[in-house]
Length: 196
Image 1 (spheres, rainbow, N blue to C red):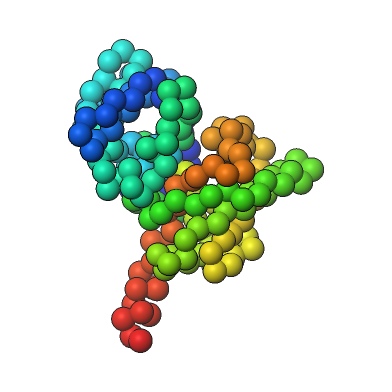
Image 2 (cartoon, rainbow, N blue to C red):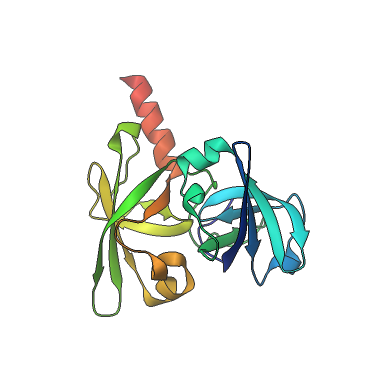
């Protein structure tokens, strides 16, 4: 379980394909605090630490994960948003995030607004995921509030702190991002679908 509050940025040091799996070697300032078998979110994708080598650690993404996320597009030197699982009893500063990406979206617009930024994303509505105005959404692991909710797109407003301390500072129009829709909204939608 995660909160969507990014703890650290990690740098992709090495990528290795093995069958349908992708092994990612990541470097962070918190590597020394990690342990093998720990869950860590990478751009919102929960992956298990399988090895630790000095300042680097290794996680493995399987085909299902690569098909639903942007992890397969990463290159050596890219940065990723990192969040360790929350501790029981901690404050939930973001919202309930599972680390299970529902689908990707494309960044279609970035507007600077005198000290903040509005990012707009478009996603495939055929997967039946929804956003609601002022609801929660996780974009590349970052807990955000939806504005301008539409059938297949939404926007988020980014404050300077979030911009500087996440991958939003490197995001460009045309880039793919990972989306995890609000888990409570998903359950409500599923219950509603079952009634009809």
